[in-house]
Length: 307
Length: 307
Image 1: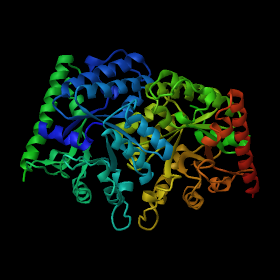
Image 2: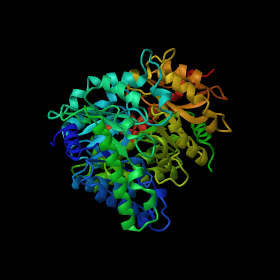
Image 3: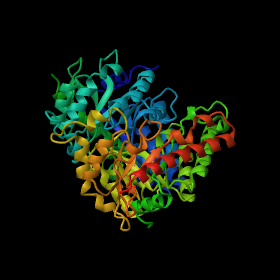
Image 4: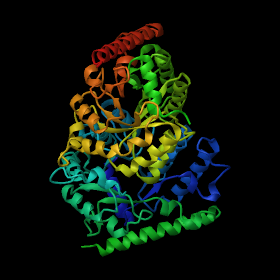
């Protein structure tokens, strides 16, 4: 069994000095000209091949520079069965490049269906093996158990959506229930389970939570409730949140630098506007610049946040 | 564009006289002896072939006897890329046999990711085209829009999980928020959208909700809040709820017989104990008997419920 996900993430991000995680969201309409082939229709085999080329080229840019990538399952599913073959290949190629892979699939179901999802993504020998998976807990805490059990057995992580980055996050997550909002109640309920995926080296827990960068105040409240759970923080970059908001739930690590989460950026890295109609080399340079900028932004913010 | 999902379902189930929908949940450990091949390991190609044979044989048993089937996506994902090829094939074969297909995938995400899921399952020409999809609304009402828009364009249905059939349904769905539980608040919020997927013929709406058969009292409350939304009712049969509880949210149709939902049964139909180690013909007979029994049980219950 590999080390616990939380230890692997914290170790990697400490070494690199930043918490950036690059999202891999191959929306067909955004695939740069240099990678396109033909009409790019969802069912076509050469469309899947074009998407795969872009994914692998992006992995080559980010390997060694970030500790984790976050593929978005929806984009691969939209390509049909050929897209799922690409996903399996990309997951393997990312891990072969030393990247941690957090699959963003927001899965959740009851009993034997949850077990099947855990077998698909988190169990030892899973066909879509990843290091961590995002899950949805609306169906109840019992529905998390198969995911946590599989992750405990494989050194994996599980990230429960608490507070999504969209405006509609308010609709259910903020309902007063009755003395604190639903997402805080969910956070409190997860607290008792966090020990199950705690990394012995760093004492961070890989039973993490998704808290959008667009909600810094809520991030701080969740951090009070869950002092050692990793945060997955979407919404940094293209969705408009800055680095300070993205690390609002971080806590000082051993050297004083704040840590405790993955800050995810997708479009800003993989689809930089200057790379859209450039040749392959032009796209690579644009990605490298975008990566440099995000890393510098986060590093400077964390340096200022040093205690 | 085909007719609205709600009209197609109500028309089909009125003709057959019952609301049974058969779940297709190919858990590897349950595949009957007659269909097994070799060691049945998730990654193996012949395992996917064995699962496909069972799925197609089950479709042959239920075609013409039920109006809809409900494949469980998790079971196909657990088989890896080959399993998703089987899923696409089974979806097409079910529709070719005149069955409505409600894919149970509990998808949900924000913005462009929700759009990608809608493109994968509900849009015109989707690679995993189905007639309706289960979705999770925890991330907010804005996250439902791409699903509803795609369904409106393709004559599809969308079933939002309100009240799952498991014991843990209480954890979040029952939180007092503050004058009514979360699931009732969600039901109320869906009310304004139900008209978007209303069938002109029957006036039922294909913006449906999932309400477990294990919660009859809650079903009646949801029915008051959502008078014309179809219910998808899991938990009948193997999960222990009887026919009376399963139709608790139904309302009298034009001939007085209660209608307004799909009552789903998976294991009890596809994996009858007497069929487990029988030959193919023995399994077929066991499935036919299980189907007869469930249909008779529901038909008798609805006859007693006639106004």
